[in-house]
Image (cartoon, rainbow, N blue to C red; front, side, top):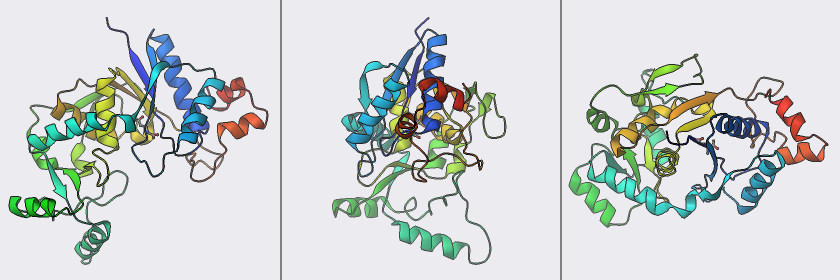
Length: 291
Ligand code: GLU
């Protein structure tokens, strides 16, 4: 049997908080129990928000917690060529199209479509589905606009992508979804509409990078927060399109604050470093997150 591979994949855009500590320690514990390897991946494709200081702080916090990981650490911004190859395969397969429509034009389209009270479809994060404007453009118009140097993203043509599937699309869930989904879970990527596969400024998006990295790193077990449960439907579809074997998924509970809301960097929840300075020990952190 091949050795199981687990990974913790933070984005270096702020300090780690208790929610990250829980995810990292759970991953590390599960890898140890399975006799597996534990990897650290730095998800920094959003280069405007990612900072090397945060990457250094993440490593310091994880070491303080007593975690060790296999070197080398994979930093996504060092691997744009890998995402570009996967994107090229999707372009060749005819399942993505260039999308030129700006955010403002999308908002205007959705507002107009909803004027008569009919809600425009939204994805599981509440973001409106892409309007059909870009999907319906002629090949000649696409080529002309690309040749003119107009900025564009690549979007998945969800209908075309789904038509490539042979049978059912599911995954094995050993944790639980928001409604207790577990075991063989049926994926429903259509809920996401034509998702962005590569942004205007990078040859990838979160969905493509995570799927490519998990495959290239041989990740067998994805252990991550329940907030990413629905994104797994998109990940399963991309794995099928790119010919990657699916890992097992374990979506874990989120660590909530005393008001019951999810911890977040942007809302200023105390980072691990601040808790350490305040005198908490790694054992206190373990207890605080219920491990
Ligand atoms: N980088 C993502 C985050 O920090 C996690 C991605 C994943 O585990 O699939 O939320």
